[in-house]
Length: 145
Image (cartoon, rainbow, N blue to C red; front, top):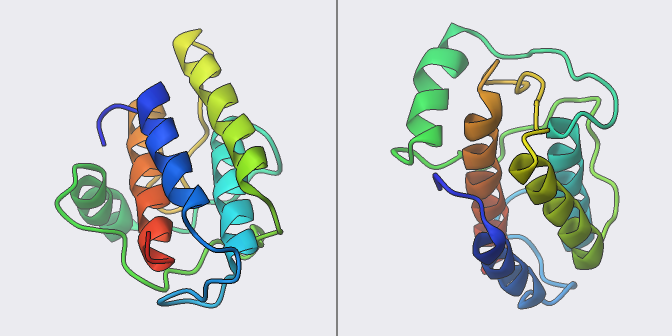
């Protein structure tokens, strides 16, 4: 996912809307609403909202896993735990849509200056946009969409 655009967001949102909110995940323990909250929180964190999340990665996550995942050679593994201070809260598709559209406005205006990624380190705006695409696809597959 080298490009995160209006059409990319629309495609993701259509996939989210195709999921019955009562669907059980194929792996993991999050509910559909918690997964949407998790994605919303991760996106908002990258936009500079919310508390700072300490770096929990290491040499391997920065220099091996990050390039493999962000360049599409490897998928995000199942059951990777989010940082402890980022607990999923219930959300809905409309809230996530608002956040994604706000992110796109920030990117287009050149105001997207993300912090470090909790596992991959300083990946910059392009790295974060790739991450968001792969991260959303990971959780959509988790719920069979």
